[in-house]
Length: 192
Image (cartoon, rainbow, N blue to C red; front, top):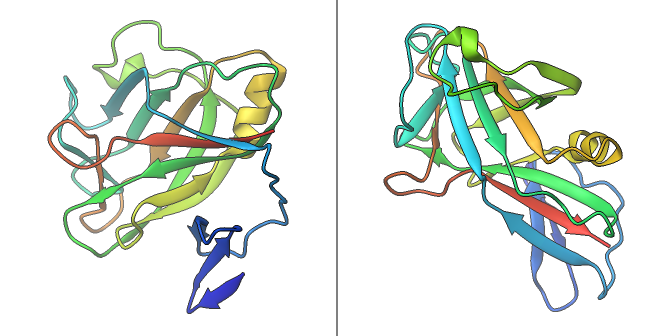
C-alpha cells in the first residue's frame, strides 16, 4: 500500500489495483479463493423534489440548486446466499465538468410501489444510513456500502440502495446513467 497525495492504492499480487479511496483502506485480506463481481442495476430510477421525472436522462445532477432534493433508486440482482460478503462498493461515474463535491446519504430501501415519477412516489429509506461525498474529480467514485448490503443479506433482501442529495448553491455533480455514454452505476462486490 502506498499513498500518492490524498489517494490510497491497494495492490494485490500480480500488480492489479484493488481500489482507490480518499480514506486509507480497511485491513481486509483477500485470498486466491475470494471473488469479485460487478453488478449492473436491474431497476434504476430517480426523483426530484422540483419537477416530475420520466425516463432516465444521460446524467443526474446531485446537489444542484435547480434540481432540488434528488433521490436515486438502484436495485441489483440478488446475491448468492452461500457467499460471505467481504466488501461492497457503489461505483458512480461523474459526467461533465470536473469540479464540485456534494454530500449525499446512502441507505437501504424498500422496493417502490410503482413507477418513480413524482416526489410522493419515493420509496422509504431504511437503516443503516451512511453519509458520504461525491466528487466530480473521482473516476469512478467508490462509495463503501458494505454495511448496507450486510444488513440486507441478514434480512434476505435483494440489494436496494437509495442515494439522497440535498440542493446546494452550485451546479452539483453530474452522475452518468449510462443511457447515452458513460458508465451506469455499478455495484462491486468482494466475496468469499
